[in-house]
Amino acid sequence: QVQLVESGGGLVQAGGSLRLSCAASGIIFSSASMGWYRQAPGKQREFVARILSDGTRNYIDSVKGRFTISRDNAKNTVYLQIDNLKPEDTAVYSCHTRRLRDYWGQGTQVTVSS
Image (cartoon, rainbow, N blue to C red; front, side, top):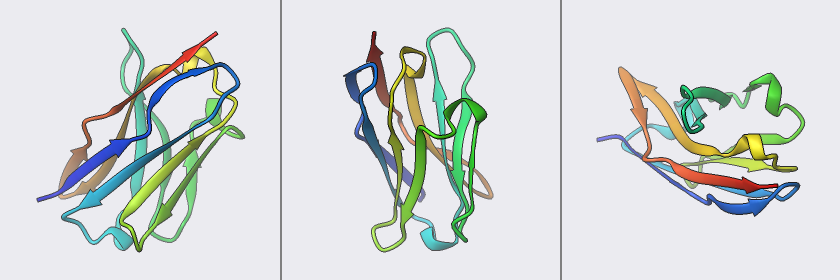
C-alpha cells in the first residue's frame, strides 16, 4: 500500500522560507519519480516540481530560482525547499507519485502573509 505523508507547512511572512517533506512508503522509492503539486483557494491543482529517479529536476516557471526539490533515498523522503516566499505561493502542497496509478498525500498548508 502506497502512502505519502507531507509535513513542514505553516504560516510565514513574505520573503521567508519553508522546507516541505514527503515521506513515502509502499514503493521502491529509489526508482520512483516524485512530484510536488499545489492548489490555491478557488484554483485548480497545478504542477510545481518533479524529481526523477536519476535526479533530474523539473519546475514550473513561476518557481524557478526559489524552489528546490531534492530526495533522500535512504530516508524514502522527498523535499521541497521554498525560499523567498510570495503571497501567491499560498496553497495546499501535495506530494505525488505514480505506480500503476496516481498516489497523493493529504497535503500540507502553506500560507504566506504580505
